[in-house]
Length: 170
Image (cartoon, rainbow, N blue to C red; front, side, top):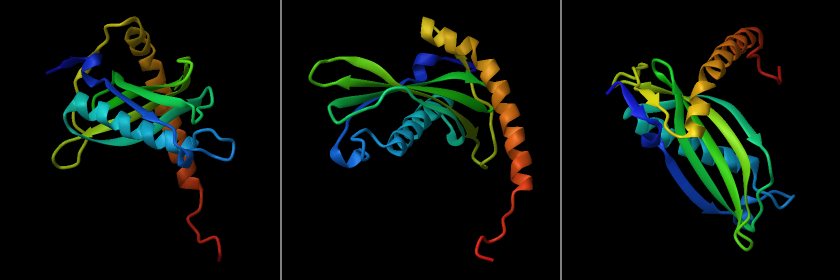
């Protein structure tokens, strides 16, 4: 299949915030949220490609509003844009106050995954077909984000070649 609807990669998960999930500000640990984002995004990428996938980058995680133990956390992820073997996955995180029912966008994230063949090499993925207004907007802006990722990766490689691997205690 050369193309798939964005909705075919959609994953939805809702969880509750427990005391061991919060920091000293009584808000959800950012690292916990990031782990959950990577997990759900990996399901979307694998569902879209039907191949083993690896996280190539976490392009952005924007924390927009605190999440508290009074909230449930709803993660919605889907593939928004594809290259040859890469897939951009968008995750929106909605916090819902379980008492009042008030919902807010608590965070958004973009991640990139690469599909692998049976030999662990990058392999072709289907293109995406957006349908909703939100999907179309994310698809139309995907090429620009992909170009920025490519530039950022090149700068990261330059920096990696510059920085030392010497043991800090020597």
